[in-house]
Length: 195
Image (cartoon, rainbow, N blue to C red; front, side, top):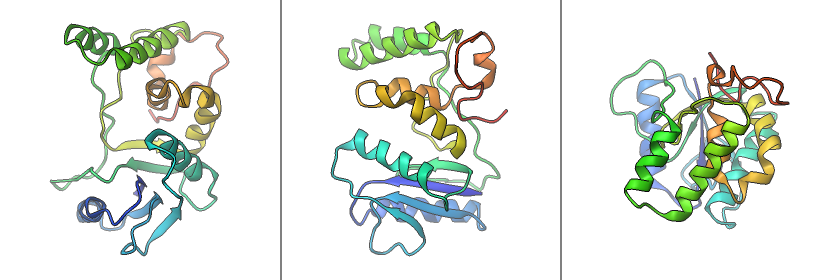
């Protein structure tokens, strides 16, 4: 199994422990780090300066994964604060349920209005695309990905990545079953997931 971490700069001890947890469950795993590479790490990596702010760095790291001929097609996207605490055999897809439920819950809780606005824009955009009852995959968990599909989505979503990151993140993980009603939209029918 392939694991690709997108990382901030610095020595990053969290990353060290996260990698150890991955190797414990997946001893034959292929681990990559993209972004800030700690001095102690000697494995597969793509080093990028991490000085452009959180979201811009994340976009640059994802684009580096796509552009590299060496990164695997099929991988699990990881963050340095993901830890596998028990032995497992696979990484499933996780979601929070309907995006509409999350939006209503956040409104009732009077969460950050800016974030609620982005969630609302995301929901409206997905509905205009013909996606009925989109799910929220914004779970901060490992995400199974396909590099070729991520590349197509990043091109399609590039204009949204700077100002509407939740929209782009939702598109990365929409299951094909939710795109059944997309009709004649000029969009791929998979959006980075396998069925």
